Image 1: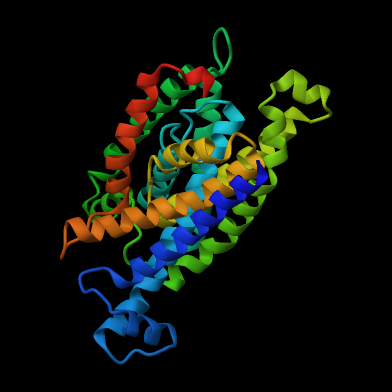
Image 2 (image 1 turned 90 degrees about the vertical axis):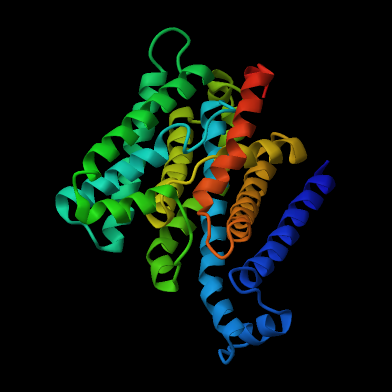
Length: 330
């Protein structure tokens, strides 16, 4: 079984490489392969070579954000044993967005580090709130209760965010554009401050595979096998919160990547998180780069932000999961 899983993992990696090459060549002006190779060698003499230089950070940002959201979604589904878990559906991304909006509107926040820490704190508070609400009543945190509490929290936070920024004409335009979720305008200076947080989150998330496999057996059996259930859940959740908060601070809230990708990867490599997590990481990067490419093609010469494209792709997928009425078996 290990060999087919490895084949799928390598296929995703090859697909990501091909998509990255397409991402730096497709746009308002398509770039020839000769110009791409020259630009990668440092040339900046033609318009095409200059375009490649601008698209490289954008492609890198799409890869990092997609990988982070794909991994975070797989972790959240493993922690909650909920196939509908997703940073967007559970209100984590919106919690990070609301925290950033409060920081900008009330405290004049502008430093990149402040954005990152504030978004991470907002994501953590939102995750704790949704899980606490979903745990109330009989049965504890069931998939349906978590999905409903997450959806209600997302709507409430979105309403609060709008109420906060609409009266502020000086910040409304920038925050509303950021809230859509996108990777346009990326630069190395924009990526570097958040890179350490993403690296730590990605490493911690991948290292949580064994813990998530234990949690999948149920809390009692996991404890019987010697796993500290609370510590395992906290460690995995911390990785997901770091990834969601840092990505939201960088790109704005992007939904459905963490929902769609783990489901596809689970069909290909199975439920073992040692394979599922790296597959979801690479698959998330593939999905977001693809969404960015589609956003440039369908509205050329204008662009559609990736947050809109992923919503259009993910909403039917979410409806299909719900209509299957087999949530407990996934």
